[in-house]
Image: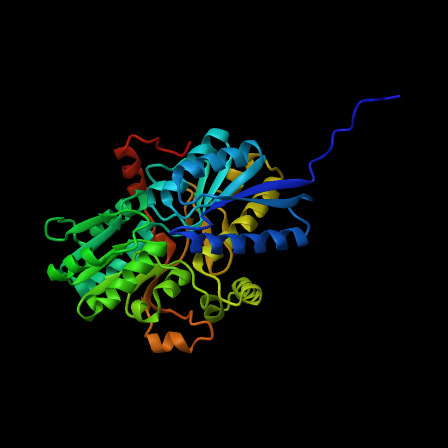
Length: 402
């Protein structure tokens, strides 16, 4: 009689989601979690990944890089996660990606915009689904140069990885590199009172105010700028916007504000993208509101991971990475591609302007915030191979991802 125990085949595969539950980026994190759970439910209903049910394990990053690092270690070591996604703070994404590299697992950035994640700090184990700061600066800079050339800019910037990188890129693409002429002020993440610095902005005869802020900080700054009357003579620019942040600021504060996005809920209906239409309708039915761009990214990532595993015919990391690299896909909009040399999702991006408050209020959820000013193909918006090589060389990074 053979008493050798039968080795149990794992019936589930774990993927981890690390995003903030509360705090300055809590609403964006909630959008990610809702959409990710929807995606996993749908994948499991269709048979899972290579016959295995997907278990989504959530960890609250609290928008804190140290906590996010601990979460990533726990997800990989204790939960046996094959992949982690999420991240709102780019500093969180950066550290999560570093843990992924050590563990030789994949991290897919979801709402992490700082260009260095796939540039100076890029490596084989990190991918980014959303647009980056350079793409945002590029798509908006044409409109800004055309309408606000030689105007006096002022930057209010969150003092973190994303803030500093994004301000520098917007300065570069708007010809406002002179920091004596175009001043800036750094703020801490979690700031809720911007009145004193906004008062200084008024005194400086500012013509364009760039708020390099995100989440609740951005909501407070936009509301206070509106209440103080800044919008009467100053154009406000926001590098990245989501509808949950726009909603938090309110229709009046958002009116006329310039920003960028990679996706918005009306796009699938306007351009007849079937998967996108289905996603919006399912999300609306479940949550009585429209999904944000953060939700769209978090929804797509589990499906992209599933398809890569199936193309690789393996859950092993290196074959899955190879299956992702240079893969083109149709998700919730037009074609995207996981570019091989930097792992950035190359995709169409949009310059947007906040609609008039009266128009926003006509929508049943008051979430129809964007007027599209311009759209730009990802190949044009993203960093070129030559630029990427130069960026890597400048910091003595490896010439290819490793």
